[in-house]
Amino acid sequence: TLQPGKSIASTYGGANIQDAPITAFANSMAQRRLIDPTGPSPVVAMSVGVGATALADLMEGGATQSWLNNGKVIDGFVARALALAFAPVVSWYLFNQGENDTNAALASYKTLQANYFAALRSTATSKTGQTRQPKFVVQQIGSRKASTLPSGICEVPLAQAQNARELTGVYLHPMYPYIHSYGGAVDGSHLASKGYVLAAEMSAVIAGRVEAFEKRASRPTTVRQSDLMGCRLMSWSIAGTTVKLKFNVPGRGEKLVYDATTLPAFPNWGLEFLV
Image (cartoon, rainbow, N blue to C red):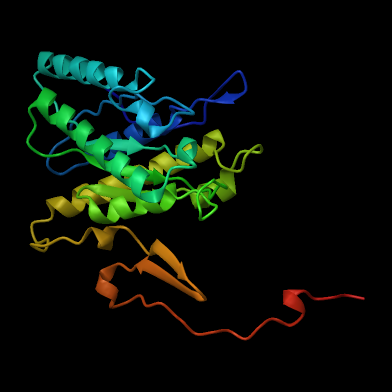
């Protein structure tokens, strides 16, 4: 059981501790659970992540022990919770993966991620006996690396965004603000340790707001997940000289609109020459 505490950046031998995100996420959730008006509840954090790994290798039959470990840690969690007279519930998964699927086509990665989430949910509900499905915060990768695809760039971020739009209980948290502020000095893709902590704490804010929204007695009978996703690019296509961009606009579009006004060209390509 994690007691609320202040998350700190951690290093070992000069390298980032990659589990800092799950620790920061769990600490933040524990803080929220302590002040929950329906009563406090303990929070347990478990990690089965494997770095530098394609998504297929995290799944059943993959080249890592991740899937086997997933079942083991849930079994251990259930046994410990029941021993302490708690009802075991897997509430959230924090998902951060994608760079090792740089050359995966959008449709292929999208299907693979959806299948992975379905398998995680099936395992969690069967082992805990819980009736409500676990939810996901997807930390959308923040770099558009070059790929061998016809588009020439990694399509994983768009696949993750589309799954968040289409799958129930999946919420997107873009990483590009943290990449720019806390990016690694080597590849411009991975975060510094402080960035991982901050990003995870903000992911907990997303999870906490979703939980608070679900508990509202006066909430609408129909919930649009797009209202919780923010304004972001969801898809794009090119046909000849026409580029079509599709954005998610929360609030059913009453407040936010896309300004298609064409701005005048900058003189001198935006450069100012000082003599």
